[in-house]
Amino acid sequence: MTTDAPIAPGANGSTDRTYFAASDIAVAITSPGGQVDRMERGGRSRASARRGPEFIYGQNRTADTIETAPAAKPRRRSGRRMALAGAAVVLASATVVANVALMELKADLGRQRHGLSALDEREIAAAQSVDELLQRSQAADARSGTLSAEVGGLKTAVSSQLDPVAVARQVQPSVVMINTPRGEGSGFVISSQGGTSTIVTAYHVVADVWASDARLVRVTQGPARFEGTVVRVNEQEDLALLTVPSKLPALAVATAPPAVGDPVVVAGAPFGFQGTVTSGIVSALRPLDGKSYIQFSAPTNPGNSGGPVVDRSGRVLGIVRLGGDPGMAFAIPASRVCAGLPVC
Image 1 (cartoon, rainbow, N blue to C red):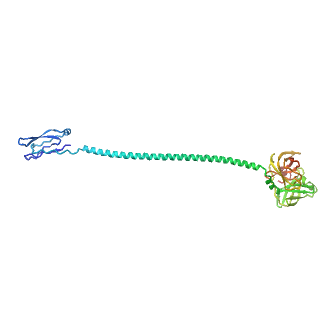
Image 2 (image 1 turned 60 degrees about the vertical axis):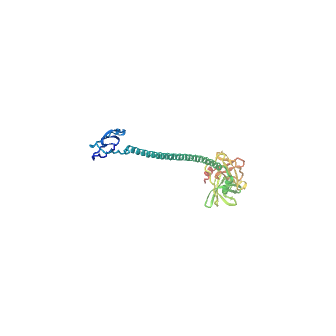
Image 3 (image 1 turned 180 degrees about the horizontal axis):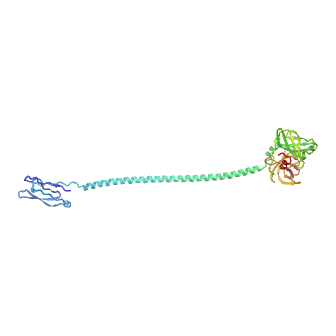
């Protein structure tokens, strides 16, 4: 940009001025009287030479004085540089702020990742704990199953064992002693209805009474005594049935034959001693004279005939038929009793 500097009015009062660039060098040509005759261009400064503006000359070439050109105004380029510098400062500040924010964001992300990692570890630990608990529970269930099986086995073993005391307490109220003019024997209550009880015994115990048509016997159960009546006999099976006018507890009859080795209890009144109980096992299932018998080892004596042979549950397996020698007693099976009378 150029600045035009005016020349003062000449001596002749002309208002015409000659303009020149402030950056050019002006040479004043004077007359002998000292007045400026004309202005000539003496050259350009380096700055004006670069810009290349031209002088504008007026018609009046005389002037009393030459006005000095004012200083050049600040260049716009310097303003732009300052603006750019300010923008750069602002950009740098923004960059610093952005970098700080980015660093804080990275730190926050790192903390979050650390927290997530710790959470994952806790979840893994919790899952492992759950797996361990499940394994322990399964192991406990397995042990519980084993214990249950063992307990079941023990119960089976215990139930298979004979408790003579319990069996005797169960069957004795149903076992009676039978007296006839020729002797005594034993029997048991197989059923009871109303005020009458039906008793099973061996035929050979009441054979003399049955033959005399008297058919009356004396029945004793503990301290109580009753008059019994023989109502039915089966001589071939050696079975007899009689009744008493009293309601006494009946014994259940086993539905299956015993196995060899099963424990048994025999209740009766050997030699008239009622309430006698002995125990043993099934020695064999043996046929005699074309009929099946249960051979057992429980001791018997005269007076046990007709008495019950029961299992560990107090169910009747048979009635005593023959005895006397240890291990050589025989009983009529319950199945033959039920078929021979029949009363079961």
